[in-house]
Amino acid sequence: MQPTWQDMHGNTSVHQAASSGNDDVLKCFLSFGTDVERPNARLHTPLDLATNPSTRALLQKALSTVKCKGTTCNHVVFDFVNIRYFCDACQDFFCSKCSTRSWVFEHQKAQTKERPVCRCDACANIIGKYENELQNAINQHEFTIVTNTLSEIKENEIDIDVQMFEEATILERKLD
Ligand SMILES: [Zn+2]
Ligand SMILES: [Zn+2]
Image (cartoon, rainbow, N blue to C red; front, side, top):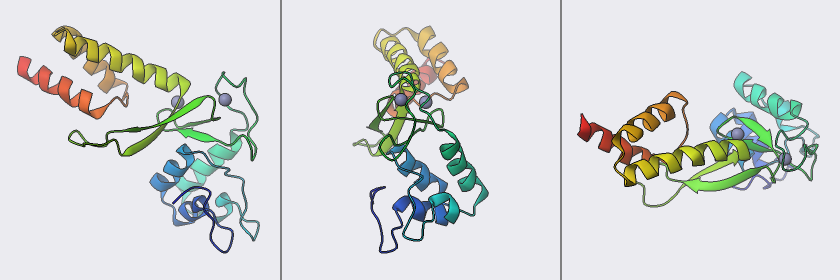
């Protein structure tokens, strides 16, 4: 289902996720980019239909973020053209220019990248920095760096590639 899909009442899938109170599905739609202000045929926005407190809080946060927090766009004001994209790392809202959407591995043994993620430029840089550092340390058998980088990643809950994380963890265990 695409975020722009609409039923006969003009409800988008964002309306449906909002009214069902399914925050995970809603976050997924938000990370793909959505116009959260868009009303259905009865002029109800997704927030109007949401009853679950955490769902309401998420939508209210989206609506109260009126400008992109990124710097590439010079803080564009959100509207139906400049829609919001939800960074799942820092849980904030950015425009399309200041965020990147990609697919990552969901599980350690997954063959294909099936988990969609959206990250703002700042979060993408941090995650990329840790992934590079860890991969280099693994390749060069720099075990102290592997251990230190891994503990920093855990401490700061950095959402790095799960398979790289697993490889580093196995390596670390072997050393004990
Ligand atoms: Zn972010
Ligand atoms: Zn922006």
